Image (cartoon, one colour):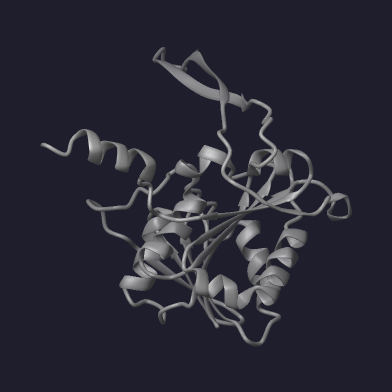
Length: 252
């Protein structure tokens, strides 16, 4: 199976490199890394249109890697549509440094890179280690490898995106796995007014997400120490509202 690895933390980020090291132990996988050449978190599904994309090749022990001077979605687009690698069977984006839960997926470069694969007809996984202070990615990588080995046919057949979040606690403390829906990440944001050395004022954004109470969501699952697995797709149509609008505006 041919797998494209990508992320939004950058080509040399520990998460993607750990994922590569674990997956390369499986002889059945043909691996390629195409990832941004620098940190590109929270860039969402933006792409580069008015600037060139530069590629830097990095030989791998198993496969080939490219660092791209663009966004996460650029990496997947150029990998698949630019023919710089053979067409993959699966796109895996991650392992991200920090959570990609609830409505934060709309800002996430990690999830957007995986979704770009789906838009181009390739099933995809996005995987995140849900804690910014965590630095041991091997448990998350091992979980991914096991999940991929055990659920390979279902993953390839489903054709959409599976978003996985691993709690940032010791592996022995994981409570299990939950299949979840997206929660609603509500932030208590703070915009702090500061002043630069030469006097220009600027704002620094920060904030904390409010605790989740809906027990069916990804936010609640990770909050409680479970691995969260959320199936997603690219169709944002509100089908209930669609039927209502068709009735209301039928004479237009």
